[in-house]
Every structure is written in C-alpha cells, then in structure tokens.
Length: 236
Image (cartoon, rainbow, N blue to C red; front, side, top):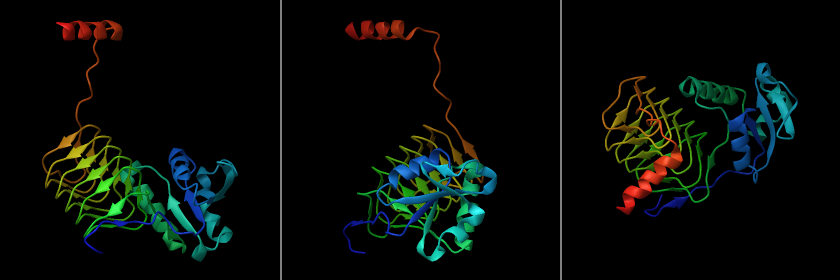
C-alpha cells in the first residue's frame, strides 16, 4: 500500500447468487446488475415461489447441487435481525458448503494508508473512510457514511445511511447504528450496542446496551398555520 489512496475493485467476474428474497435482496440486486446475478437462494422454509426478480429462487439446501461452489460467489442480503446474528450464521453456512462470499465496495470508495475491509462487506456509494481504519467481516455500510481515522469496526456490524464516526472510534461486533447516528472521538461501542437514529454517543457503552435519542415532538398545529407563523416571524 502506498501513501496515496488506492481504489478498490468492486467485484470479480465470478457468477453471483444472492441469499434472500426480500427488500435487501432487491437492493443488492440493483447494485450487482452489472456483474450479473444468476439466481437467488433462501432456506426452504422461506421459499414460497420458484423465482425472485425474474430469476431462479433456489432452496439453500440444494445450492451445492445446483451450482459449482468453486466457481460461484454468494452474498447474503439479510437485514440486522437478532443484532446481525442471522446474517452471520448464514454467511458461515455458505462458507461451510464451499462457496466464496462476495463483497461490494462502491465505485469511488478508496482504502487509504493502513486501512482494510474484511470479507463479505458491502459499502454503498458516497462513503469515506480515513487512514488506519479497519473493518471486520460481514459488515454493511449504507450510503453517505463518514468513518474517521484510526477506527476499528468489528464483524457483523450494520451501519445505516448518514452515520458519522469521529477518529479513534471502536465499534464492537454485532452493533447496529441507525440513520444519522454519530459517535464522538475515541468512544468505544461494546459488542451488541444498538444506537438509534439521530443519536450522538459521547461515552463508552456496555455490552448489548441501547442508546436512543427521543423522537421529534408532534405539535397540535396545522402545518399551513405553522408555516405562516414562521414566515410572519421572519418578516419582523
């Protein structure tokens, strides 16, 4: 690695199967269109049709009989249910039957000096990650996330859109960060921490702790009356 930022290849050219048949599978499919998704797969108990998004939907139990594991990648498009443990379990099962896990790093995303991203990670567009920051395996990072220098992000982490991590932040395994959450400089989120949307975390957390900011207050006002009052106040 040189001192200059290095672009990261978004994928290689092996055929790709997406695990999932829900909203996240549709999202992943939209990003992998240029690569070519050949099929979808789910456990048989969740398989209620033979196709998804106009391609075959294969029972996961039959995946190794349907595709050559050594020539096919699989990426797990499952949300953060059970604090990401379900997604982690499926990823481990994919590897156990011989398939390689796919990843996606959006075009324009760069790894700077001393930084790395682990196996089976998804990083969407307009994200930045500064130098000497390391990301574990099986991590989802949504659009517009800023990760500061010298951060350590564990495995099985879900980071939603607009999150900002200051420098020196540590995120433990199986954490969840909601939309527009922020973590202050040098703070450590213990494993299993849940951070709600629009929440600033300024102190270290304990295992499986929940940090949530109260939602915006609903006023008993007609929006048109409220806007007119604001405009009148600004005119004075």
